[in-house]
Length: 281
Image 1 (cartoon, rainbow, N blue to C red):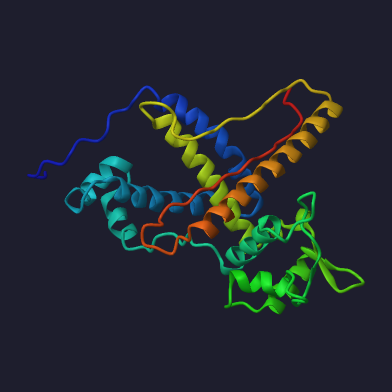
Image 2: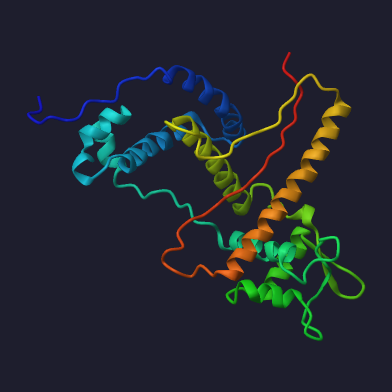
């Protein structure tokens, strides 16, 4: 028996039952993906066990409260396992270099003055500057000097993100700016975007007062295929318009008030999604 006085485990709350039902539903697509990719139950449980310990360490207020016994009470993980798991390295969450560079270049091509036509569409760019006008090389160099413009171009040509016309100008294929299936870039966006949406929704559920984040959707069922297709097309157009507007504002703010200061520690992720499927009888 221990002679110390460890804090009691948190009591069950009425939300726990409905919460587990909601979690079961939201995990279904993820579990389906894991099975398709050959990730077995023992592998997932080991990861969840370590994640429970990692999050418990973040939740507890100070080092004195972060005892193995306290973490065991919070998580249900055995203390012997906790000692082993506390030595593991935390998840790597930084963006791959190719993600940060490509996304910033595309963002500027879509939003910076001089890179769009009268209708707001990205213009075709010559590879190198001519008569002081915009160019692909200049666009890349405005974002990074660590990666050569030719390396970016070769990668984008291979991925179908740009095409070259008879005048040797580059055209941005905005529809192709989707990472290759199974690539490091795709999995980064998969984790980041779903994490942020779930984090916002979780904060709203846990909030004692008004919900801190926007989490809204338009949802209808009992639609014909033609109705669903029309709504999907309208939603796609509205989503692209909204994303481009926010992107232009972000670049304007950054150019007006650069954030290379220690105080610049915030990030914002604005996203939209569309989902369509056959109804379950």
